[in-house]
Amino acid sequence: MSSTTSASADTAPDEAASLFDRLAEVWVELEDRLDRVPILQRLADGTVTLEDYRRLLFNLRQQVVDGSPWISRAASSFDIDHFELRTAAIRHAEEEHRDYLMLERDYVAIGGSLDELRRGRKNIGSEALSGYMFHYAAQPNPVGLLGAMFIIEGLGAKRAAGWAARFQEVLGLADNQVHFMRYHQDADAAHTGDMEAILTSGIIDDRDADDIVRCAQVVARLYALQLEELDR
Image 1: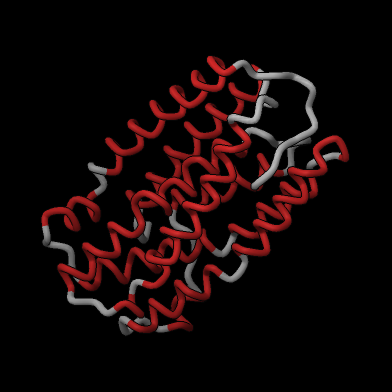
Image 2: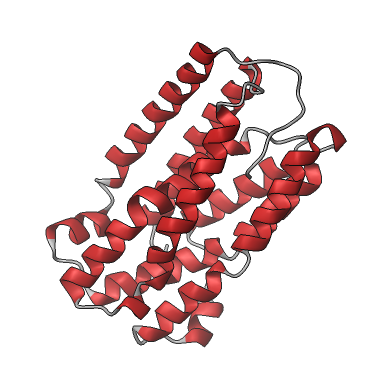
């Protein structure tokens, strides 16, 4: 989402800073939890295997395919007073709706079966994450989803390229086998910049800020959960 609502409430600069501070705390908690995820621990210490990477892509794909649909649902939930946010969500959904195809190509490039991948089901964490996102997106004017974007786009911008580089270093993978993760470094950095412009625009009131932080907390926990529950 890359624009603002037409809400009349103003956020003072110190209040905007407070929101960023609260979101930064959520991010630190997420980083700590990710450091304890088994597959990411193996990636960090260099013992990760090609089968680990294949399992990661398999599990991520089942949730990634839902990304554009829940963003589209959010767009339909914004009323006319939030027209610019609705427009931004529609644009974002269009940008995201082919992402899973990149992941599928990476999966096939490392020897995975496309038919098997497409027959896969979400793991426990992915079920919880997708269910929460669709539920929240269906609420009237779901401004709190900016918190979800802070987490999801932040992971793409800040962690995905590093993960890709480490998989390549340890496993000797080619660029066309980690394209999905590398692509999101630039794409999600742009989305993160758009979101930060909203958060500093002066239109986020105290209730919006609380909703944004709470949504970020939930999505951070559920995103980590899907990485903890691979194949389950």
